Length: 152
Image 1 (tube, rainbow, N blue to C red):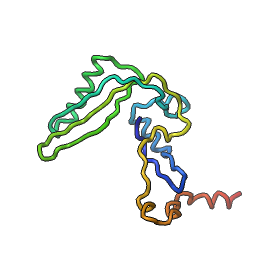
Image 2 (cartoon, helix red, strand yellow):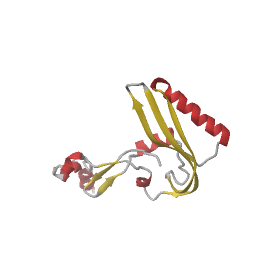
Image 3 (cartoon, rainbow, N blue to C red):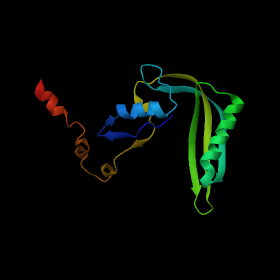
């Protein structure tokens, strides 16, 4: 799964990624938007390979690209591969970095009902936990709605 944009929760309501964020995701990410411009949800995946790349921090991106290129040169390129980056660690004392990927092949996918399933990262506003008034989070969210109702 891929994070397009963080989901923000407002008193039980969810603010989904904007059209601009989805367009940017379609342009920059290798996602399958085959059904009416909706992302797909991966229903069944087969694990293929775990790739761990270690090396100097200055060269880690190049080493990472070479490792993934070597894998795909060996296995071939197919629609349906997903590269999931599990963690990235940097040891600033020694100048070393580690990147771990898991490569899976999507056996079955279907269009999502909403974009929530594709955006795994969620952010709950920190003030809500400390007892702040949750109505503050609605400020500006529906700012243009009053004008719409006045026109009718």
